[in-house]
Image (tube, rainbow, N blue to C red):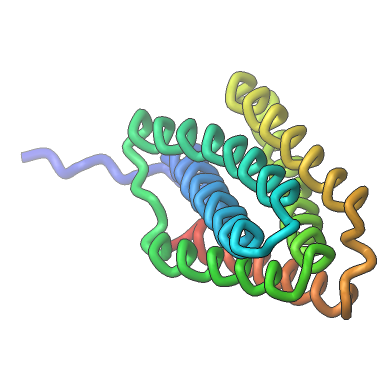
Length: 186
């Protein structure tokens, strides 16, 4: 009876890393959809904020396209979503609604903070995947461009004028970075 061949160091590392990338990106897009839903829910309930509610709904639509693609990629590659999905969904909606309750500028500051972290995150993945999986790198580049457009709109709409902007930005970015690390593994 032959003993199984021992695994070589690094065997399966590329597949494991791809699983991390897909899992965390799907989680991020899930969270983005729910942040915008939370913000839009508050804005729709506030007279005079219809224009902003419509903007948020449009950005949610972009994020939903990204989420649908990552759902498809998870299925194609046999990767499970993060076990944190229910937590992220609720936390993201609460973040969106909470920042919207603080006002239009705070909602925009939230968008800017999240999109800055996501842009940096995607940029690292694009560089990592450029040679190994150019098709996925190209898709991530398009998604990153969409995120940058959201960020730029938020800045144009007054994100930096939000009350306690520096603190709000720092707390949201720290939360996003922690969620990324957790979602890669869990």
